[in-house]
Length: 117
View 1 (cartoon, rainbow, N blue to C red):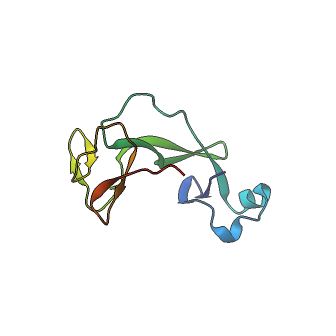
View 2: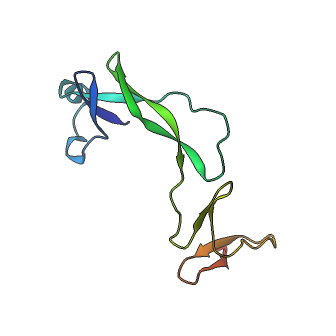
View 3: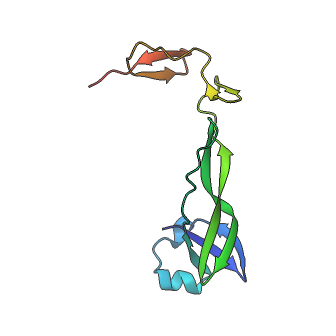
């Protein structure tokens, strides 16, 4: 459960600090913390390299906090990968297409075969 600190109708902090995690929901509400309620995620596809994220802009209604869905660029998975419009983050070496499962080894700057234990 995610909570947000509200003062008046303004959200000032999202995410309950660790030192408050043992408090009851009733006590947290008395301290100004409200539940963050999710809304339905959009179903429209996004461009490669992007994703939907739920968050700001925040609003407060009926004692609950609501956010909005935004399209954001995915974080860079490895320092060596570059952004290519229309493709997203791309490794400096193409992914092998031989049907095997690979993972990226940043130190070796190459794809390594995924070994099954």
